[in-house]
Length: 154
Image (cartoon, rainbow, N blue to C red; front, side):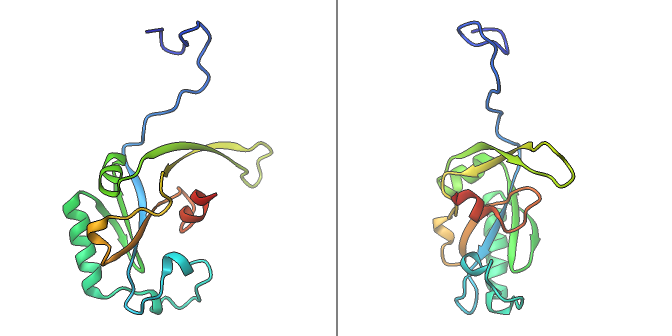
């Protein structure tokens, strides 16, 4: 095996793909009482969240089941925010988690910066045993709430 930073042909290795992060964050979209979908209507939804609210039983069951599987509940509201290791998402949702580099133009800076994001092989992940209460799970993009679904579909 070549020394670190060198390729088998003797050249230097530019950017090797980094290891997976220890923890990923995701948004869990729960099934609403009304049947309306915050996952699909979230961008065009009116400010009133009531049509998208899950029942208290759905919230309790989702929290209980997600914790039983091994996820940590970070926050709850119209959606749940969960965290867990990439392997847990891969095993539970049957997906592959991979890194993707993106150039970000920050206000006040002349040069764009590189940001490493992790995406799923399926933009909307599912836990088939929980399809009755969870509409879908989308990896969170750091610093950009509710944007993961659209960005991952591009």
